[in-house]
Length: 435
Ligand code: UGA
Image (cartoon, rainbow, N blue to C red; front, side):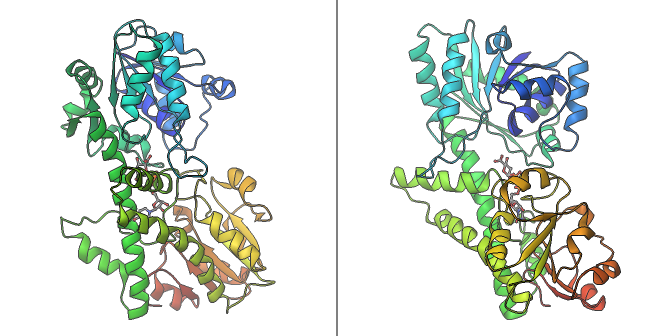
């Protein structure tokens, strides 16, 4: 089989590489000439464990290639995937669909045989029908169907999530398109992955429902964590105690500084807007959005409190700035709220991140970036953990005490144990656990 993948961002590049691993011939297309050049040289523009080897292997096998030319990419394909960005539209919180619609126009101009046009981008309900209408208007004789195939992969574990997903969701408008999609995902049928075959609208909404549900789950445990602190309970035991109930499930009950990243903040907002627009408001998600926005800001107040009520003239050592570990992605990272708030309160911030500093430098002016974790702690009055990178889990605590002016640690990811930290002589605070 043969497909074209429009967009070499996170979803496009990972999905393209993974489909080629399934044995499909994949041509990835992008408008960014520099990016295509780099990909042709084997340079991967994003940080994702395992992606470089996967790309190299499939390029070498002749199944994966990169081009600027959509016409060339669409020659003889069974399906063309649209995997372009759908960022928040400035001003109203809706998803900005201009890249999706522009891609649809270009697809229309190059359709010369039956092709399934698949939306892999996260798009509001109704976008598939609109893509169908755009193509029909631009190319009335085109032989095509539109499908929706939302992607559920997580950054940092994207390849595993694609290759061994909990499920695949496919929305189509015809049996012919469904058959093409089944053939593409054949390797997943063989490992008995549940496939939800449904309508375009249902598939589109399922993606948003999944992300907003997970965002709500995180927000729920964050609020329970705050309550734990007030009443002397331990949020991890609460999470385990409820998560072992199969109806609730253990995952996504880890408290923290609030969810970030390229998906949850954008998708929660977009679904809220869609729901308001059609007169069926999602009040739970409206509240989730509000709580999470405020939470990120409140985290700076925690750090100030741990420093005795003021950080003016003090130095804060920050470990981790990306929205989560194993990525260099800074989009909507809690650090983008927390660090400027500390600086505004008069603090100097020294920081280290294993992969995110290149991007973070542009977004967080005034931060002193260091070569390693210990560098960030030199002369600092407080150590703050914002992202749970593995390399921060086993720091040399004795050495840290010699670097800090006072042994104060604020662990917003709960990667240390309060008892151990007390024994090591730290004034330690974390989320939702008795000190
Ligand atoms: C998320 C979803 O998990 C994917 O299924 C989905 O495909 C993706 O969005 C998308 O729509 O493209 P991702 O944003 O890569 O994936 O990252 P997550 O691992 O879900 O983490 C999101 C945020 O929630 C992070 O800031 C993380 O720190 C936070 N989080 C996650 C918690 O605070 N607690 C948890 O228990 C889990």
